[in-house]
Image 1 (cartoon, one colour):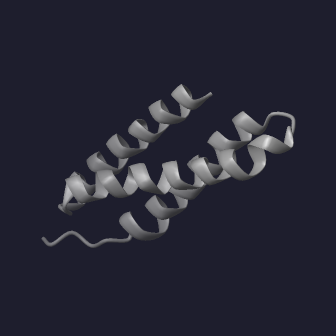
Image 2 (cartoon, rainbow, N blue to C red):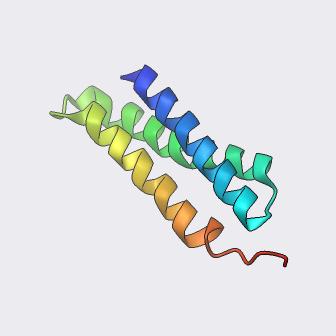
Length: 84
């Protein structure tokens, strides 16, 4: 499931990059923020909950990371005003 987490973190980085470009924000920094905002919660979930053998834990870890990244995107990046 680690490969899927890596692919999803790259997808979030691209999504943040494209959204930042539309907002005329620094896209590279936002791509890094997108990667981190998904990967860190995902990694914490895997390390904390993974050993507990919770059913569907790998899928839940992806959803948890995605939810955290989406919240950052919604409440921070999309609220930026364009410099126009």
